[in-house]
Image (tube, one colour):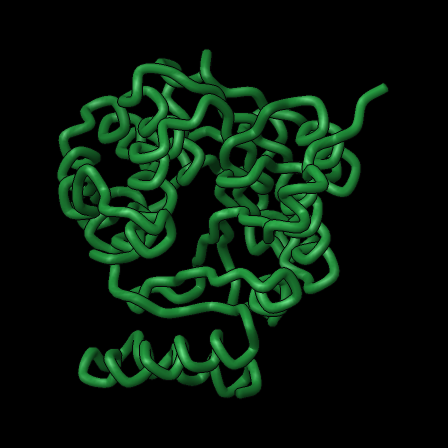
Length: 281
């Protein structure tokens, strides 16, 4: 039940739908045996699996909602041309390839209606813009992005984004809800999570095992019970999977993109009884 074997199973399931029931069962047995870990599910059930309850709407509904978003469509199209980024030139095709991301980073935010989301890693702001679109559709909320300017070849980044261009995919209409905090997540994440009542934490910054586990652990300790911890690039290493096992939590990832995952921050009766918040004197 090694992580390498699990990662290989994820890859096979992503490419071959016929084996997904078997891989899903394997992931559930593995998580049960380890008393925590990642479980694979289809995109339709991803939100329900993470939240542990029926959702108000399906991920397909939320994808359609995004396709009807004229603000995002216009911004993505304009910025793709300005920055010569063909990946984002066809807005509909882009969304059709983001089934898992839409469920995790848009649908869940629409379902839980957070007052405050904190993310690490922003760069061009493509996913940040989608998250902000969810808050706007909810009728309110804030998003704080913590990041250093992206530089190709540094800190696991494959492209460069000038500091003034950070988050360029974010439409002007959404910027009142957004605050960019420039700096190292190792310094800023504990400060922000200690000072603010955060409902959703999203990791998408430095993808090293030590840094990823650091961010998950800080979020685990400083977020309230019931808050969401979401992450990109969970298959880069075994950091997220081991974090779940160490805390006896079950997280969920979609077959269509098992490199993203989410979990609800839950505590056992002892920890909940002692208290999980910060003691302020």
